[in-house]
Length: 177
Image 1 (tube, one colour):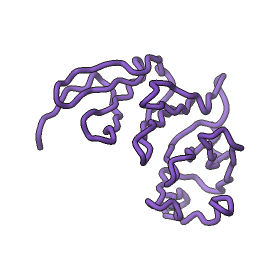
Image 2 (cartoon, helix red, strand yellow):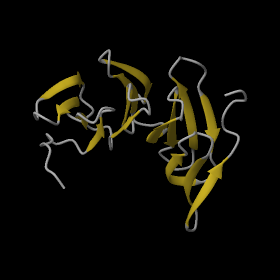
Image 3 (cartoon, one colour):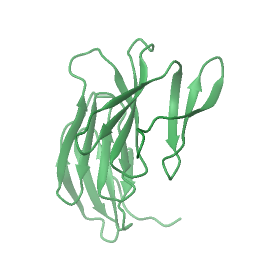
């Protein structure tokens, strides 16, 4: 292993598409870019995410966007433009919590996993970047993680029932993808 740089305190990060930088998502500070060759840092999106639960960051497959999420927020950061677009926000103290996010293979849609504070409302929600209609896919079981195949055709989700199980999710894309 080779030491590259310090991180300010964020616990989640994504590597840039060219591998020359990392993006650190720190709840109290926002999004910071760290150049690996020099260690130089710059805040690219200042925003306080304190008190919003665990943070997550996912780079799109084409390297153009970063999806940032907490229990209460989902945003897409356009790396070239330096702009954050809010996709979801939970206002108030109750409502479904966001607890996982990923990209479709074509990078045009975010897939977010939600569960209600009572643990009974569970679904995946699709957020198209082009502003198209969002779509909910109900789940009738608890879940802890999900993944998509590189081509986006297959999804798998870890179901929590009496024991941990992996389930395939079929027919989730609109026809003519």
